[in-house]
Length: 174
Length: 258
Image 1: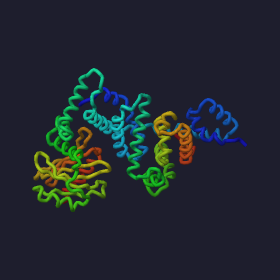
Image 2: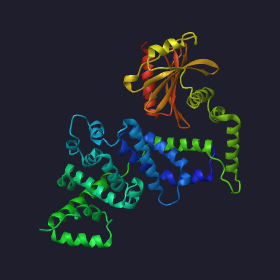
Image 3: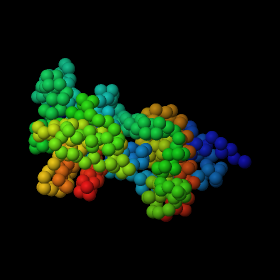
Image 4: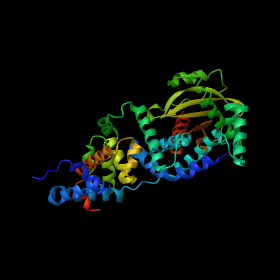
């Protein structure tokens, strides 16, 4: 097995973020098998572009690539990634039931994750990056390639949606 | 009447501690005189606390860790030239040597060379055949999703007639068939796809012997093989082990029921 210094450095920097990469992919594509395949693809892609990594936050850099990999896959698959309503009905939760209504059933943990999964993708990803992955607004802006102000307003709107799905009495009972 | 407009969006960021000094002062002044917004901040904190407590990043499966490491090693072994301008070190010389091997042998032989050490001959031949089928744009000799076309195509090319199970409705799409060579014998390769993953299914007669289904992983590829109903089958793909096993079970089920 041949490894160079750069390859070893890549592994040291990037492999510790595999769980974060997997979480993001899983929330974006909402399927564990697809998420696993995409994480593997993303790592190979990241290795190819490692020369362009100029230091800084390696997790944000890796997550940027994971997200792009997931987006191009979603696009290839449906060729219409922005039609989230259709997407919700197909994948969010069981068919035949309103996803937001379903989100209030079950244990709090399940309800929270179902509620996040039921969000349209542009809201889902900000919540996952902030509240699951604990990235700063600045890091989120760099992963998504959008201005800081947009991160702020998207998060605010995403959380408002979550609050309508998850009544406050529920959240108190943790 | 208190003016809430504009604070709307800032409250979330305020709870996150992401507002700048001046804006923080503005929000705090507003919260003192607006019970509605103060209540919203309370709910916002509760929501964020619940999300953070319950939705920590989940652990990726152990198999994924292994797969990613293996495919990275594979990619590095193949593609990394030595870094210029540095003192050569052993690893770099090995990389250079590997590059020369690739240059001299070419992609196809390199694929076979790189998989042939450390593995049993049959396993390495099947893997090499799989890699070759993907590299040389020679995945199929007969490209069709109709199993009634694939099966007769093999007649006259092999001294046996391989079964061509139809698994389309189960998510394994038939792509076609190919005549390949395994252990120096002409062998049927049936090609399926699962999402973007290609599965090569090699089949040859096993006589009366049977062997239980076995799933193995090597260098980022998974193989599932065994013998049933007079056929030895060997499925290989970069698909995950679980789904490939499911595929192999469907194949055995189909062969045995014939």
